[in-house]
Structure formats: C-alpha cells, structure tokens
Image (cartoon, rainbow over all chains, first blue to last red; front, side):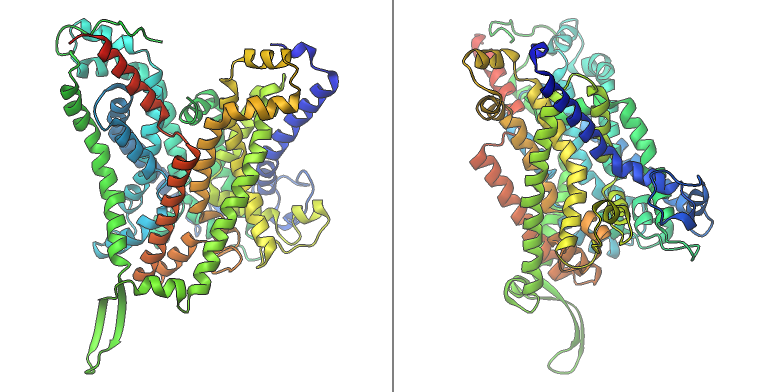
Length: 279
Length: 326
C-alpha cells in the first residue's frame, strides 16, 4: 500500500468520514434501542440516554392481549420454511448454472435473475383471489409459497457464486477416481459448499423474515400475522402511553437477533451479497 | 486462467458430451423452473386475464340480479389512463418514478462516497463494515416505524433540526421523509457493492496514473468510476427495481390513501383489498410492464451485465472444448 505518503489532512478527513458513516448507520438504530428502554411516561424525552431504564415496554409487548409471541412464532415458521424449501430446490439449480455446460445456459440464468425483479404486487393480486377461493387465507402456505418468488432467485444467485468459487479440479479429480457426478456432488462439493449454503440460508432467511406485503395481504386473522405486520398494527394498549415505546421494544426484539447473527458472520454475508455484482 | 490445452476428463461416466449435460442440466433446473412457473408465470398470466374483467353486482336490463365477473376487455386500462381515477393513477405513477429517480440518485452518490471512504481509510474498516450491515438487516416495515417515531411532531428529528415540521402528514415533507428513510436503509448497501468493485481494481493502475501526474479528482473520474462501472450498474439496477415496487415504507411510514406518497404498488394493493380485482390486476400489470421496460433499457442501453459471469464461463469452456480434438 502506498498510503504512507498520504498527507495528514487527508487522513483525518478519511477518519472523519468513517465516523460519519458509522453514526449514519447506527444512530437511528441506537434511537430505537434507547426508546425501547425508556419508561412509557417518559417516552417524550429526547435525551440521549433514558433517565430511568425500564423494561416496561418489553413487558407490554408480551402482554397477554397483544399476542406478539405468536407473531414471532409465525415469522419463524414462514421464514424458516421458506429458507429450507429454497435451499432444497435452489441448490440443484445453482450447481447447474455454476458447473454444467448446456445450451440456453445464459437464457436460464437470465430468467432466474429476471424473476428477482418481479414486483411482488403483480403476483399478490391474482394469488389473493386464488387463495381466497381455495380457502388458503390465513394459512402458512399462503405466505410461504409467494415468498419463494423472491427467495428462490436470491438463493440460486448467491449459491451459484459460491459454487463457482470452488476449484473445478476437485470434482474432476473425484470423477477421475470413479465417482459419478452425483456422487462427486454429494461427497465432495456439498461438504465444501456448506459454508456458502449456510451464508445463503442467512441471507434468504433475513429476506423472508423482513417480508411485509405478502404477509399483510394473505392474512387477516391476528393469530396468523407475522411479526413485521403485527408491529405495524400495534395500537396503544395501555391507553395512557403512545404505543411507540412498545413498537420500539418490539422492533428491538425483531431486529437485534438478526443484527447479532449478521455481525458474527459479516465477512461471509458481505461476500455473498456482493459476489453477484462483481466479476 | 485454465490452460486451453487441458485434457478432457476421462473415465467413468464423466465424459462431458454436451447432450448428457443438457439432459442433466434440465433435470436439475426443472424444480426451480417449475416453482417459478407456478408462483410467477401463472400469476402473471392470471393477472393479465383478471385485468380484463370487472366485478358486477347489480341488475341487468331485464331486471335480474347479476353477480360475478364480467368481461370488459381493455376497459380497466382505459379507465385507468383516462377515466375518473386517472388522476390517482398518474399521481401514483409520478410518485413511483420520483422515488425511483431521486431515491436511487441520492443512494448512489452517498453509496459511492461511503465506498471511497471505506476503501481508503486505514483504521476502523472492520467496524464500519459491520455497522453498514445494520440498516440492511432491519426489516423495511420496522425501519418505517422507527422513522415514524423519529419524525414525530415532538420527535428527535425536529429537535435536532430545530424545526416544527409535521413530517408524516400530506405534503412534500412526507415525500422527503420516505426518501430519507429509504436512503438510510439502501445507501450503505450500494456502498457495500461499490466497495467490492473498488477492491478488484489493481493498485498498479493508480500507480501508473500517479506517474502520469493524474490528481485525485481526475483519477476518480478517469479511472475509478469507469472501472467500478460494472459493479455500480448492477447495484443501481437492483436499486431501481426495488424502488419501483416500493410499498412497505410509504404504507407504514405515512399511511395508505395518502396522495403525496401513494405508489403504484400501494394503489394496486388498495384496489385488491376492496375486492376490485380487475382494476387491481390492471394496475399490477402496468407496474410489471414499467419494471420490465426499465430493466430491459438498463441491460440493452447501459449494458448492465447481470449474467456476465455465467457468459464468461461458458465462453471459456467452449474454447476449452474446441481446443480438444473430438
């Protein structure tokens, strides 16, 4: 690196830039956490730290008539099922795009990437009518199946980049040793691709967990709604407080586990997210 | 690079005749394509059909009660463009376009700036990369509620800015609120993609430029920007597609049926919710066409190369095959 020659002023400017980026990214998130820990009747305070730390908002979130626990469970089931189905179906497609040669390969890749740009509402309108007719409203499958529309292309794309990064010689050697392609895939490629698949699973799960419009459209029963929809519908429960404290607490519950997972695996996730865009 | 003279794979079932691969590829791809056909192609066609029908409850000429869908041809479309609700449609169309152009523009500029800072900074890179993932991991609907809280009349935004703006009420400030919340969540992501593009530029390109006397600013315009262009174009294309279908953010942050922020997705959703499937499907179809046209333009005119990697690979192997006498 030839950065030793950088003038002092520029270095300071860069460090300042770093600070600005961090503040930019974290300040609103910080505000959510701080607001969650305020006492409900001190919600209007705009001090940087709560004057009294309190868990009242969190207690309100899990109050008996809110049913937020159930919403979290629903989110887990929908996002989890979507992720598992996506990986099962998508791994084969990703391997094929990354490793096999066939005519129409570009067309196949193009179609998959094109579907990821599909506006969700265009499939919600007809599916809403269909699901109403067959009685699927307020079911998990009514949320999981449409979620595949964005999860599957995303997973195939991310997985394919991971498969491409693995040396081709590995399978070739395995096949020279007498394994069939299927066996080589199962015994050599899959174990090596496990980290990539895990990363793809995280990315897909987050995408499915954050989904909103499908869950909003397909469910009108409070018991079946997912966490993101539930938070958006929170109304003042206790009456005297503005429900924002409760909403922020619910937001902390919904996002903090994700943020922790993301921070633990940040290198891999960045690799997975950016691999598609960079040649 | 793999040498073009690599011997063909020998032994067992591994001979790579293109036909065999073709069949295997078809078998392995079919689950994905079946799923995509069921959940994307079928709804697409169904929406097209649906958009030509309208729900009718009423009396026909001879006084009988009719209930059900009636074929109306392109009436839903002409109604949308020129009928009573045309104003609402064009407003939503304008809002969608406005959010896309302005939102993606801002996110791109901020994203590039972030990427440059991260690329050149010496300290704190790990930390900054971690924090940049936080907005990405926050669900959009949740971020909308968070910004709603920040933008409260007596909220922190007004206190810091020393203003008394009613951010989430109808008016230009509502558009601004949506743009700010959108930028917060997406600019870091653009930054991440651009950073990855910057990192593959070899350092000697800059060394050579320095020898030739190119200064920082010129370096940026003449070297950095052209070289990150592929990564940037892909990032911008994905952002554009994402904002064109924007729903969660304005819906939760400002609310439904708000003229200043209503987008095409919201309009279609609203109609579907009123069980007016015909017009809803027409709106959704128009949005789909809009998205498709813009994506096509990006790929054709600007040369956004989404499947570049696959293409390079297939060329490479083709060369490999040609080098090997059958």
